[in-house]
Length: 438
Image 1 (cartoon, rainbow, N blue to C red):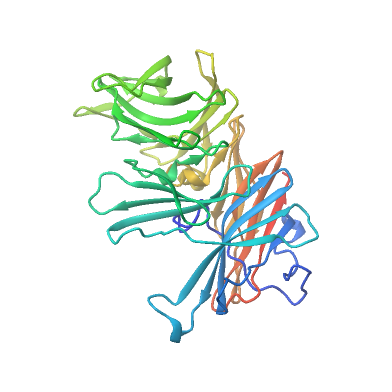
Image 2: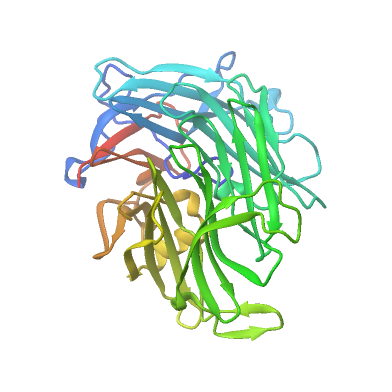
């Protein structure tokens, strides 16, 4: 989160507490009440089994909030004495902590077998994402890696014991767009080679993958695209594409058996959107006065909402638009269009979309680290607002509180908070799970 390889949003690293220790082995809340954040749980690292080496770091990788249930995945890094060292001075162990909001007892903590993050020696890029299967205590690890010289990557799902559940070979960086759905399915997809929209969908119940990586066989060029699955089970695609000098939005069904030049999708409807049309021609590829991508999307029953950030190529300024569609309709509902947003939020939406979420009404939200502060940023039709700001300024060895793993549930935001230390070790480190109602 994060080097990105460690999490969807790796920011918080807890530090030594103060002298007042509570029954969980931690100290007082890491954030003051004036920040708006309230501590609802504390996680103190268990010593990795069989290891009595000095604690060095604790890093959160996942936060799951379901009703009052609170689940955290984190890793503890320990310093290995030189006499025991092999090729690394550190030993890292994953843990999952299970508790409920405002519980008077410490969380239940379980050590996890780390899935192999380097299956071979030819890997040039690796991203690892520990997750909870939706609404459960089940721990899994999504691993994304690419071998040197390979056209396709690898998307592997491991269980808690480190045993492979399934593997697929996407042609793009699936780590930025992949989601584990509520039923345990895995869905990934993005624009691939301009004319191609890729689909990678794992049906857990059937233990099968649907893979589509084919162009429409005509003069369509994808501008922005994402696949999604509705509650009915329908797997569809949101497509923003150009054809000639015009641009169109559409919702399309996939045609898995299509063979080039036949199109791999069939449009349910097509809607002209000249604001995304190309401004000129460079060979056969369209060129644009701005670039548009899918920044976030969410489904709710039979409805999907897709958020499109657009960056002007000349000014580099970002705007945001959101569209919603419900199964059975033949037009999009524009929730808002071309709302100005900050560069910090725009960069997240375009370059690190795995760190951003949205709600069905089109509200975009994320934690932004900007000008030595962490804060929650929301963007709606009314523009961009922020709250829950936390200073990250240095205080001697300790660098102020940080926020990560932002989640939204029933009108409240949840996050993991900790401290980053400089030269000191992390003996007595802990993490806080916090809640904020805007």
